[in-house]
Image (cartoon, rainbow, N blue to C red):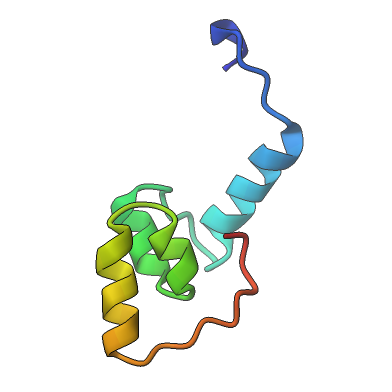
Length: 70
């Protein structure tokens, strides 16, 4: 990123790596990878397909304790 003139705080890299490995294996931070996490409706909604995730959560009565990063 530095080659493109973008400075990234190391805490953001650490946070991203924590989210990607919290299940005991490496999960890509892509639409499919985030979809596999399924722990937090808000995390899913903050990535892509926001209305789909929120609609599914509402119709299925899901609760989100909001303990994640999102």
